[in-house]
Length: 483
Image 1 (cartoon, rainbow, N blue to C red):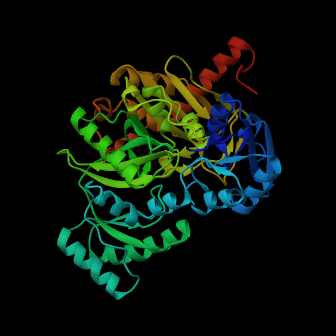
Image 2: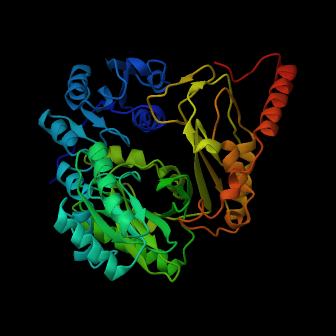
Image 3: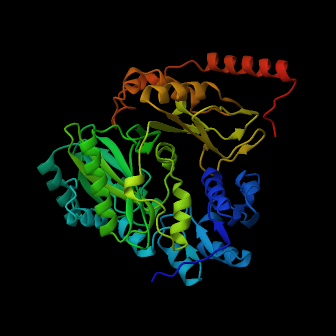
């Protein structure tokens, strides 16, 4: 019989919106939450939402990555478990190992699962052994002449373009598309350097490049009783430099293809002896052929769209699974209804290559209304630091139909008033009016093939913002959303 665990307090080893997201589900289960923060992050909003908060060092960033320090803080606080969120240490197998050694519960997969699936080469092998199609690829390339020879032979066999990928890591880093032999040889060196800096390993391999595929992923949950369920598909095709900009659930595939992909995701999950929440990712070609891409062994930024169309709290299920409980529903009870769209409102300047725009949020009024969900971590007067992720708030909307979801997202974007930093809002407003997006015609080439989306007037939008602010002040005498 599987022993059920009990914990009354958890530590969230993260910051920003995902830390707040985890805290809310924990508190609904009457679990106390400990927040951590660096001195350079002392004004962060997530600190105010926890039951207690502990400074773990001067920062920036290095203390959020210090396993020993976080374990020590968890023990001192009396927490029995740690949730890693996403980013930072979430996919570092040494972290759950350290938690186990300290007698703490890691709310996520076991270290050996993270280690295996963190290697794209091992993950591909698991998928292939489960009879899931994988994209033709090389083995790990040696960093010398034989490795270059193997790379050139692979390119001769499959033709250009070719994808160079880091064996470890994710998040779009260590990935490079090359168009010819010269770019391949120089790209191998650059990808190795980038992979070493990002993931501590310079191992890379080559993969055949698919022509304008859709990027589709499947949310899964697995418990310690052998139950594995999927929560349907998401479409993450609209991305820039392999970084996702907009996420949609469901993916908009034909029913038979969606069912086939979801079934493959469940098989891969079982084969990997998975536990907790995760995501199995695929590339889907126009003819319906699909290929395994990778497994993300953490909660993902875009989990909110799946929650909106299924009504299932994924973080709550993570917590219950970590407590030794079975998944609280069966596969038959999972129903995707309507459409949800999520985008990330970042402090970035789209017109300047999406360069981060840190600064003080002088005015912040958020949108709201039926079918609108906000997962944010900023407030009026908050100074967005340059040391961390530039995401201010995730906007997720739900509509009973695709058109309703698009209309609602457009209205919600227009309802924001943010002054003091540049944001990605005007860029997304352009997309909401673009015919291909409105007709749900997009793949991974969407951003590159729609460069006109950057042709908006910042001056007109700034004038509009100021006019709305003046109207607000005239109506209320002050900004009712100010902290």
